[in-house]
Image: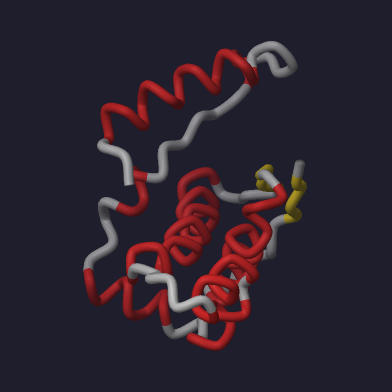
Length: 130
């Protein structure tokens, strides 16, 4: 994982790209640290109960590495859940979360957001991949 300073620097760069097609004055920027910094270990356990090891290992990236005997850290394993929690935290902060955009390599992570939103009694967001 990158240090927070590098992440913020990257975010500035990506926002400049988004600004070419979006009016940034009308965009609300949310940093996942806003929600994740408040999650303690008990909270991680509550989130984790909505996913199985089999579901994680079924992911193409993890499946190939597991079969090849290539190490998968627990940090990587929990990442989809952390990214998915962003959707819950955003919906709590802003009252809703209609859509999440991401690369096609993020499909499982985007679905994790839908899973956790449903588990929190929220309407599941739509996803759009590029």
